[in-house]
Image 1 (cartoon, rainbow, N blue to C red):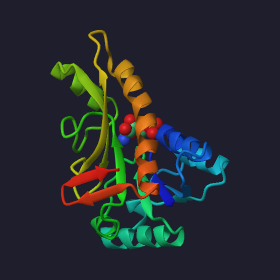
Image 2 (cartoon, rainbow, N blue to C red):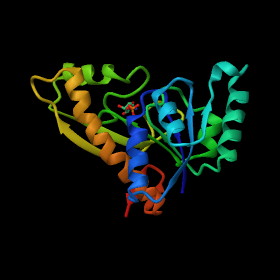
Image 3 (cartoon, protein in one colour):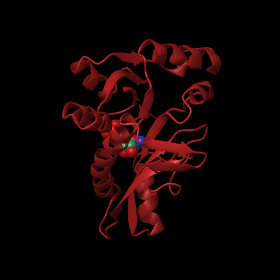
Image 4 (tube, rainbow, N blue to C red):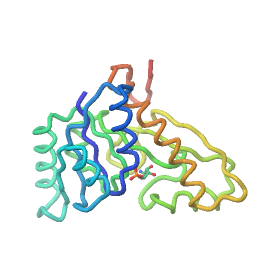
Length: 204
Ligand code: GRF
């Protein structure tokens, strides 16, 4: 299965995916790393591994329609069958969501549907979890639709929130779990073990 990874930042989830592929756990190939930032850490990682990189940003286009068309072009050129967002901070144009319905995944550093939505990224998520008094947080892998963090939840794993936690310590605990569950879900997709029906998922 050909995966296109989209990332805006350092790329530790991207790295975890690459490691799982290299170890033979996930029967897939990353054929594209797309970023809205030419200097993202994830871009460096991809270049070092000789994975094709594309810098694509809405700013390069006059409107969403031409941006979406360019994105679809790139995806086609690299024969991408599944898109994995890994710290990609921009919205996916709806034409791309439509074309890749149920084939765009994201990882979120909290237990959705709580602590998600616009602006809920980075430390803001963990600060909100701590402020809420929640005893558990975790990571969520979900499908991407037209709204931020609203798509069908595919897989979650919890971690405890400790009384002494800061956003940093909680983020680190959640990140470990992210690196564990994202490859697991990608493995299930690559092995054709995921059945999606309306708002239900069955991983078998
Ligand atoms: C992760 O916490 C992920 O859940 C969120 O963005 C962060 C990306 O981190 N969507 P990295 O770039 O994969 O290290």
